[in-house]
Image 1 (cartoon, rainbow, N blue to C red):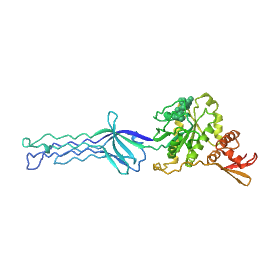
Image 2: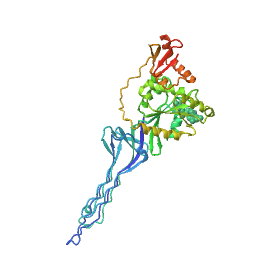
Image 3: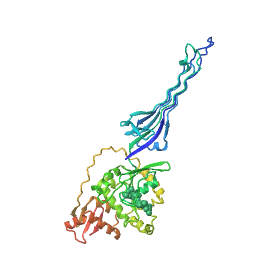
Image 4: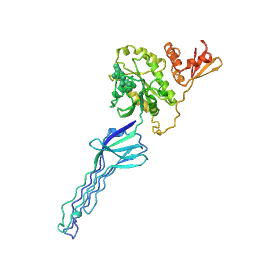
Length: 418
Ligand SMILES: Nc1nc2c(ncn2[C@@H]2O[C@H](COP(=O)(O)OP(=O)(O)OP(=O)(O)O)[C@@H](O)[C@H]2O)c(=O)[nH]1
Ligand SMILES: [Mg+2]
């Protein structure tokens, strides 16, 4: 995911040369002694390991370096203008933008401390000293300072999102991103509308968060189904997750657990990431009618979701506030994950069953994470769990192991009767 931001930079204007004449005792009419102006400062972009993103440049787009000081009498040179240093993340690429939309690579700041001048300061003007000649002994002219270079440059970096928006296709991820940020992803009533992760920058008060819509998560995404596989790696780098579910779905809870199972199967670190669950489309009458039921179902597994309508904007501000709150709680995890991380491909983790005393113990990583969140006393959730057992091949494995109705089965922290 690439973040690009265009800024306008201007070198400082050079100082003017001075018009001045020597005035000394016993020298009734001295020659010219006006010094030159100082040069204007440059605008310099520097790769700084302490900077992790380009967010600051969103707040301020125009940058001008210091002006040069004017020259003065007695041949005094004006002070040079101060350079303006713009720290950017290591890995930022700088382009010159021309008026007609073309761009030229200026620098690829790969190493800490690498720098490039993006706009030169203007030269200082010459003092009148330079304009004396045999015919003009008392030049009353001097040069004014040159203007600094002015141009548009763009800064580009691979962006790491703070927050991943996940959920089944068509749940309204793009609509939410559009409601909360300036991003304008395509929105349509069919699944897989979004085919690439889309980023949006959300501002809540003084706080800024980068959200990314992670498209195409479906059952089996971890093995490459849907579009999700390529994009799951982006979630690995996000700090928290907004898990969006469609309130009009048959079972929002099951949708959530299934997507979570995919995450866990792809990379176990994903299962531990903090999530904010949001139930979308509450503007629909049938969703309104079922709110209590949905709330109860989530409550049964210890989750209290937020209820929103990405379409009307209801609840979106609240969701964004909770998001930035949670971000500040999880703190700055190290976002500078090296781009080449060795991560073994998810193995096809088979389901294993063994006996421990009277009980059958099931080892199925995907299931463990689901059951850890399921309250086995709710018949409705038991029903959903049963479906997962079939889907994940647990039922078959248990049958093979010779489980009979009434036997105890254990998986993760839970034990129940078969
Ligand atoms: N009534 C209602 N419809 C919504 C809401 N949010 C999204 N939709 C509709 O749901 C459909 C899917 O919305 P998208 O935002 O494209 O969903 P998505 O999750 O990004 O979908 P994909 O990118 O295809 O995975 C569109 O027809 C939206 O208009 C909502 O809050 N209320
Ligand atoms: Mg979308």
